[in-house]
Image (cartoon, rainbow, N blue to C red):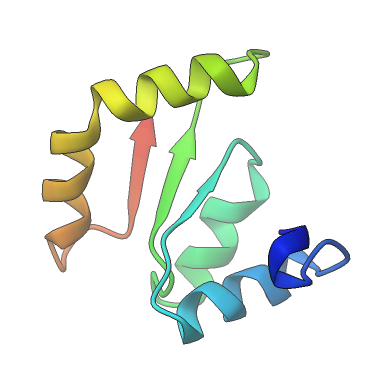
Length: 84
């Protein structure tokens, strides 16, 4: 977020930035599914539900699920993909 100048952005601000730039959010935060749902699934979200794990474990799971995530995110009927 710091590279984009968003280190102090609110959750809504992050969602709006992602929506406006056609990004997909990846978050462990339980607030984001509610927020992106309220915004009509724009942006789309990968909700990471792995418990208390480090970024290296999250990256391994994201890479292992890359094909599934790509297919799911291309589906217009899917707004939140749960990664567990």
